[in-house]
Image 1: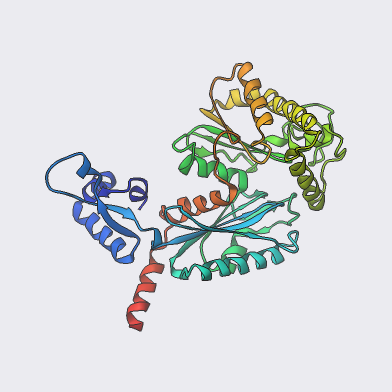
Image 2 (image 1 turned 135 degrees about the horizontal axis):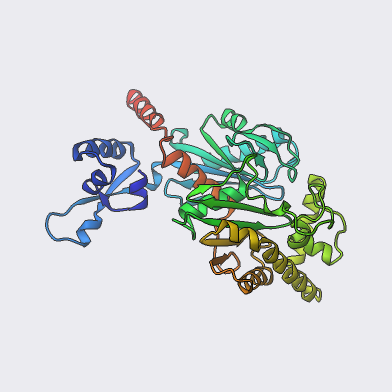
Length: 393
């Protein structure tokens, strides 16, 4: 299925050669996928290259299956319904009444998801999985939420909770890592095996992919760029330590420079309040715009200066700067110009200049890569559904 999705028009002979099995075996497998409505026939790619007998190509059927992507940030919660080719069908914003209470938030998410599936007439047998990205820290198995200071959630077994709620297989990931994985498999960074993604917002986050593998670290905190030491004895960070990179190169640093706040956020409520203030500052068209741009330039330069050595050590092929602040033109250009002037000669991709996959869509791609185009795919649910339909007839 993965080969067909990546190479629409591939024929059975090419599939057999790529997988390393006989034509007869591939024919049997493809016939099952055709009957299940996951694959359809089309013109073969080879017909465009060679004369002679025309081959029949294969492609993924959009309506053959669906996935949900759920994204939970402190400031935005959404659900995306997409088909198994990754095409967006609809995104629905969820506005939890009590986001700090996971039980209430999950109830709101489930209600919104049920409405979305009903409106688009998606049978549960064709919902192949759910990707869930969260602004929090997970254990190494990506099942238990260890802490989520920006949301205010306690530690609990997140994956079990979601799977019990939906009755479907769920895959979970930290939001920044989710975006990095989605970009490396489906987006502007597709095929890259060594990259660093920086997500800049009120705070800073990061994700590192090296040798094609996501770097996790001993405590699963690898890529937590916002809390590396930048200024010894500097201002107090939200984590309680002094002088973290967050205090000089993030959205909070810009607000502090402009005198909007003198204390870092310690609670989820404070985070939400400051996040709104930052958004208003960055979108401001008032006479203060010059000051905002100057502060953004200073923060972007600081980000480059303090990450230069880290990036040299990691030696990525590409560095990608994204996030709400990462999309700010002055901030992102200051980062790029400064790090290039210091001698960094690898490719730099800025979300201010090109589209980067959103956290919501990244959750969709997480579900596709780990639950559909993978050995985890549950083909039995389709067979069971088909058998029930035949019996009912």
